[in-house]
Image (cartoon, rainbow, N blue to C red; front, side):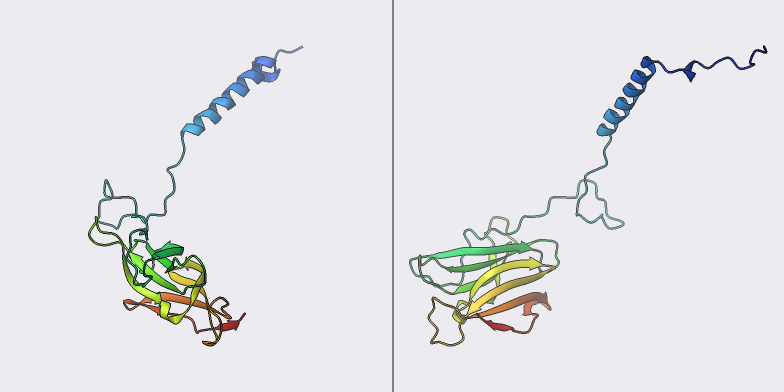
Amino acid sequence: MQQSAVPELAHTTTRPIHWVATAAALAAVVAGSSFLQPDDATAAQPARPGKSSVGTQSAPAPAPDPAGVSFPLDCGTVGAKVHHRAAGDLDGDGRPETVVAVRCDAGSGNPPDGVYVLTRSADTGAPPRVVATLVDPKDRRNAGELTIRHGAVLATLRGYSSPDVPSCCPDVTERASWRWHDGTFQRTDPDRADSV
């Protein structure tokens, strides 16, 4: 019998210790990969070329809080109540605005709503301020859904087909949309009235 020129390799027969060593190596790789993770994803845009981003990024300002805002709504002694709100960047400046539906806090009945756009004041200590009225309470409308989608304010408004309809029971529904354009909020969809 002729002897092989290559000595027998030690790993051609497996023993339990080989499996333990393989399992330990695999566990070490998995454990090590948990420490090496990619950076967290953010929605922030990268810095423009020529601008240093080191130490200049700050968290975006929160949307304006309607608490303490003086609304152009005459409620007498009962005060105003915000019952719907939505926040988003409406003018593309990277800072969010807040849209609110406000009514007199009458406790009962169906007082009309005012829908207002709030922005942060340039003075850091000042409360947010009303910059636009989308729905005037004089129009006798109530705001149902209020959302901001793709920079547009969307609202479902309920109103009345005639002055004879009792204020408890609005009988007309409108879907309204406003978008910031040329320095003002413009209604961007045709009025569509549906009887309820």
